[in-house]
Image (cartoon, rainbow, N blue to C red):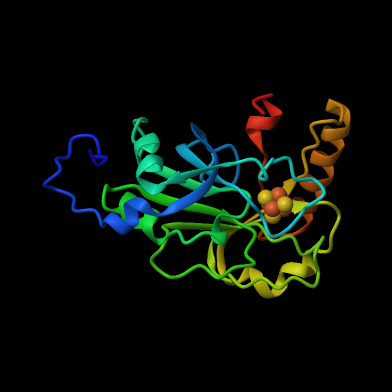
Length: 219
Ligand code: SF4
């Protein structure tokens, strides 16, 4: 039986069989509260995709271990939660053809966000909230293809903010985020926070984003 949204009937939604059969590399699907950026504090269902086209030194996601799931299976997992907000994260979600999943979820009234490194252009209409977290400070030769969106979220590790001069105008919100190191002491992470806070105070137009879930010990 095909997945139905809460309170819908099989007659209400006609899914494309090809959409339901699309396969994705999935690390995990879980229900939590967004802990960073502009949508901080809003409950979401997170769909974490496997694989990434970058290898950032601070990356704490094991995106190389995943299982292959059909879109119909992903939909069933998502619909277990009483939550209409979904975040596609990774890894790099834009390595996937997200159209089938987008159609299945949009047809059921879900709000779709993405967290992407920006190296792959995002088609118009695919998603409802675009958060780009560029990694220019590590990969100066990797060009950012997605230059418009709702949120530009940059991990601050001492880089010049001039890196983002050309990019900022395409985004509504601009965030700097200290790099939280799970292996560092509270004091060391505190220093990283204080430095980023100082940079935000000295540079108008930027706001501070904290990975509140990590600072609270919810890793
Ligand atoms: S782009 Fe994101 S997921 Fe990919 S390696 Fe960097 S931090 Fe990890």
